[in-house]
Image (cartoon, rainbow, N blue to C red; front, top):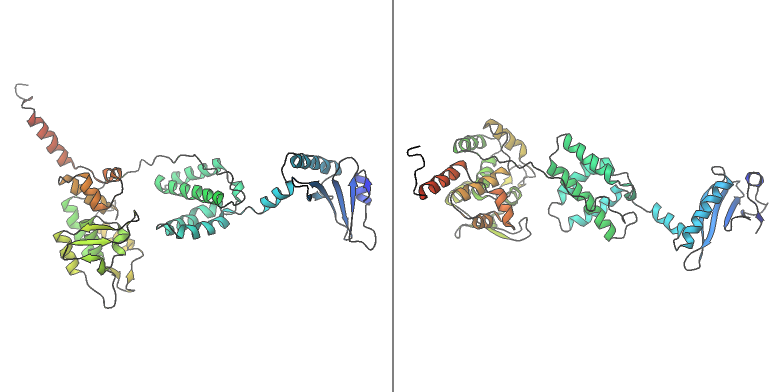
Length: 389
């Protein structure tokens, strides 16, 4: 165990004796600092120390060709200080090297999300198209709150909806929370923990008039997609969610009781949708395909539509309703119900809302209903304020 004062001169001249694989030269001024000289000619500074369990450890400091003995001595002193205070520099370095990238974590996260999230495919798409191209190559401990929030803000400036960008923030933060729960190195600090989402302020109130409804009806009936007219009609007559309708089976409908049982809704529970006379009339016209139990399958595949956006977009353009979205059909039903005098409780039961505040956001009173209300209030006062004015 040769002990020498490691300096530039003896580091340069140090060599491994013939017949040996390596030799360790110990620094006489910094206990534990060694120069490992191999028969291949490589020379490496390292530190030997004992951990909390009195086990001997060794951690590489760097190649002698890259750092000087004095620099190696400073690093060794710092590492020794860490060991004295109960830390394990060698284990910490090993853990750091095991910190996965965001892309690597996303694989495990998506497998986990698939087990319980009905919107798993949305998370998958947002990660693949937006989050991973930006952050995928970064290791978890490299994620920076300022960098993330600045990027999210830039996406809004580019035209993405704030609600969409907020969803990206939620996914990334949830991934980090799960990584910490799983004990994955680098997840001890979640850069998005406690960061509030920005207000959306993007609520759109778009409700179609009877005349616009008639134009939309004509447009969907003229569509090459022969199922579109039934899809749109049932969306506007039941207030169901798009995916609930596309995944519906004939067996879910009890025509005698006038009810549609949706086995699994967004709330995670089954719900029952009452069927109006018009809804029943539309169901009578829906064609059935031999050997197919889906209510409104794609005629080409006899499987549920993944999307009908192109045919819908063509039809709404033809009807002059470019700003009317598929989901607005659900808002339309809610508003028609509340303007017909139905309570928010009834509207919420029909739409399958778990919370009353959601129904309040969906259902909007029309100008006619509001005008009728203020006229009734004025008449009830018993005083004609315009008389003699």
